[in-house]
Amino acid sequence: MSEAVKKSSLRDTFESLVVTVILALFGTTFVVQAFKIPSGSMENTLLVGDHLLVNRIAFAWQFGGLRHIGPYREPQRQQVLVFKFPGTDAEAQEPGEHLVKRIVGVPGDRIRIVHRQVFVNGQALTEPYVHHDYPGDVMPGDDFPPPTGEYLRGSTPEWMQDLDSHVQNGELVVPPGNYFVMGDNREHSWDSRFWGFVPRRLASGQPLLIYWSFETPEEEYTETSLADRLTQTADLLLHFFTKTRWRRTFHIVR
Image (cartoon, rainbow, N blue to C red; front, side, top):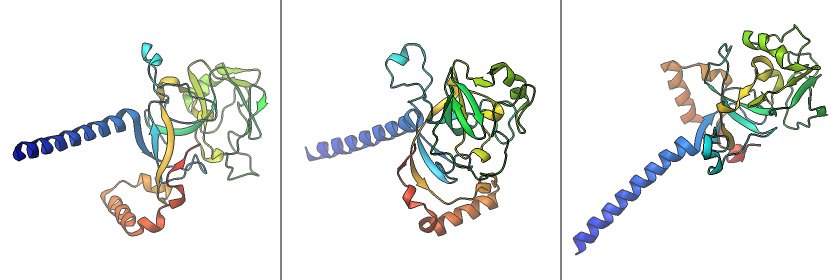
């Protein structure tokens, strides 16, 4: 009798472990996903070396009747969005690579930027999260959209050709099913001003929180040789406690 109980107990433990692993795999595949921030385009909201948990369900693409049973919702203005890069001619990104920016315009919005002040539908947008590294200098994207026939330095060829078709009375009109996004670190963000809109179907999720943050130089993410990896691993082991940004642990992303 005791042997049967022991076997049953071992089996229950094994089954519980299997279920836990399956649920964990399901969760990290379909519900939440971990991302790390490799650039400073969203400073000071997100820093290089921040590791995020992203809610993949919230903005998931809604197929047919699923929109009525899933916890889906439409992305809103001023929310932070994780999405797949939509372009085909990227300077620093490859098509399909995940990026993180903030939604400035939703479908139907009229966008205009005058001396770094963003106007949406004629109203000045309050943006307490925006960071400017060069407050006194004139930078590409400070005024947008550019005059008809002109383009911003750093723009993709596709966006240069398509931009004017979305401009009405000096304002950029966001088309249906698309979003206009910008980085919080405006002078260091390559965003919708330079490559265009983010289609709804490419929205991947909404950042939930920072589960870990480690002081990391931006160039480290381009150093991928074996020697670089070994150096980075050694740095992590030696300086885990001193370089971890403990105050950012479990920080909610807004």
